[in-house]
Amino acid sequence: MTEHEGRIVVVTGAGSGIGAACCELFGSAGATVIGWDLRPSDESSTAVDVGDWDAVSAAADVLADLHGRVDVLVNCAGVITPNLSAEDVDPQDYRRNFDVNVMGIVHATKALHRLLVASDSAAIVNVASQAALVSLPCQTAYSASKGAVAALTRALAIDWAAQGIRVNAVCPGFTATPMAMGQMTPELDAAVSRRVPLGRIFQPAEIAEAIAFLGSRRASAITGVVLPVDGGWTAGEPALPM
Picture 1 (spheres, rainbow, N blue to C red):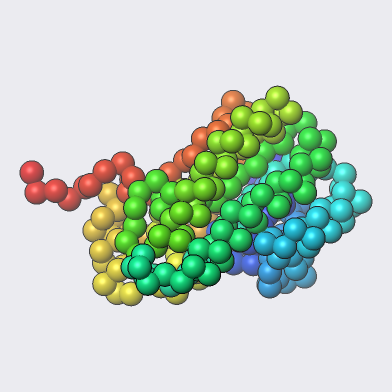
Picture 2 (picture 1 turned 60 degrees about the vertical axis):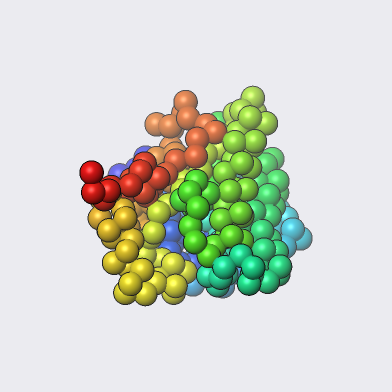
C-alpha cells in the first residue's frame, strides 16, 4: 500500500495509542512520518511539548529546513484528567485539558501553516472525541476541551479552504489506548460494550484508518467534517426494551 508515497506527515502524540498507530499506518503507506511527542518512544520521534508555542515553533522551523512542506498534520496529542463530578474538578484540570487538547492544535496548525500551504494536497486531521458530541459523566473538563476541538476544526476548515488546506476531525469512541485504559475498570468495560452498538472497545489502528482516509487524496472533497468513529455510540441507544 503506497497511498501516501512521498508525502510528509506530522503526527503529534506519536509516542503511543492512536498517534503511534497513525505513524505506523502512514509509514507503511509510503509517507515520511515525523512524530512529535512530549516523551518520544524511539529515535524516529522528536520531543515537542505541543502546549508550548516556542517549542512547536522551533520544531516547525526544523521541518521547514528539512522538508519545505507538510502534506498531512495529524493532531493527536491529548490528555485526560481524573473523572470527577463537576463540582469537584480543580480549575487547573480545565487549564491542563485546554493547554494540550486545544492549544496544542492551535500551536501546531499555526506553526505549520506555511508548510501546509506549500503542499499541493494539504490536510489536517484533528483527534477530538465522542465526548465532543455527547455528554459523558464526570468528564466536564475533557468534554469541554474536545468540544472546542470540534468547533476549531470547522472554523479552520472555513478559513483555510481557499488556501487548499482541508481540515477535518475524528471523534473516537472508547479506544484501547494507554490513556483510556488507565481509567478502565471491569465494570466500565462491560458497560461500554453494552452501550456501543457494535459491542466492543476499538483498537487504535481502527481509528488510524479513518484518519489516513481523511488525510488522503481520496477525501479531496471533504472538509469541515467532524466524524464519529465510535461503533455507533452517538447514533443512538441500542438496548432500549421496546
